[in-house]
Amino acid sequence: MRVSENLRRQISHEHNTLRLLEEDLLDHCEEFCKQPDEAHLGQVRRLFEDFSSSLQRHFEFEEVGGYLRVVTDRRPHHSERVEKLLAEHKELNALLTVIQEHLRQNPVEDGDCLRRFKEDFVKLMTRFDRHEVAERELLMEVFWLEGGVSE
Image (cartoon, rainbow, N blue to C red; front, side):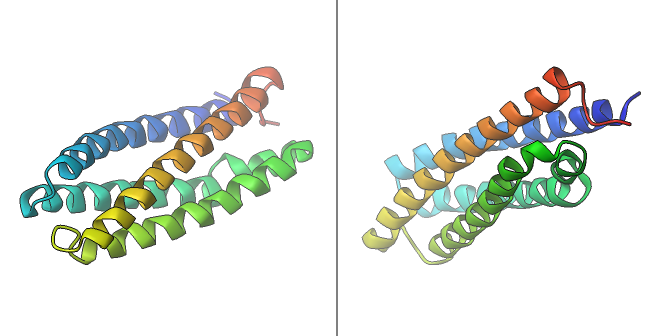
């Protein structure tokens, strides 16, 4: 099996896991926003921590052992796109930290905190979805159209 096939499968698996976590988190955040109480907040905190940890591991894989550096090494004409994706990892990680801080405070009792949480959460999910689309497009170009990155 080619290197690119192994990478593609692992990344596909990670993307699927992230999508499932994202869907669960979105459902619970919707409930929390409708009824901001301690019970819903606890669920959102737990799910956000799971999503955040998974996303950070995913970014680390892409940056260190995954396809981004391989793409840059073997398909240098994609370097600018890869660098943009890597910069987005930092931006998304910063948003994760901001939202974790909102959740550490008590958005149930602080209306401004709840408003900031909602705004930043929407910003995170929107940017994350756009980032995933950009990654998928790069993956399809490199692995499907250009024949992968194996020797």
